[in-house]
Length: 143
Image (cartoon, rainbow, N blue to C red):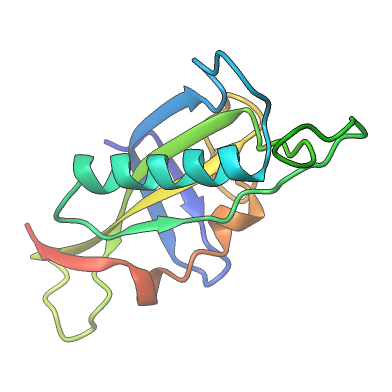
């Protein structure tokens, strides 16, 4: 059973079967959000996803970055990512048309950032999620 379904722009429907959410800046004790910190956070989330799901390819939806009107610090201008970091396991029908649709499915781990705690769903999901090139990125597996 899936948590939700997302309709990709390609017309493919994908099912979200596992979702991990965390605060983007949770545990940040010193410093401020800047490009250096954000790049490290994004890379760390990618590595966590790859370790948690080693047999499934992972894809990062590039996060939006905001630059509030605040004075720059020692590490450059303030740069803010959306407040919620997400890792989701998605599944769909097989990618390779020669595979038996009864025996095969496709999977992809997706890393993205969003502003709220809502579970992405349907055609209302973020455009970055709906734009995933599933046929290029997902991997088929046998049931």
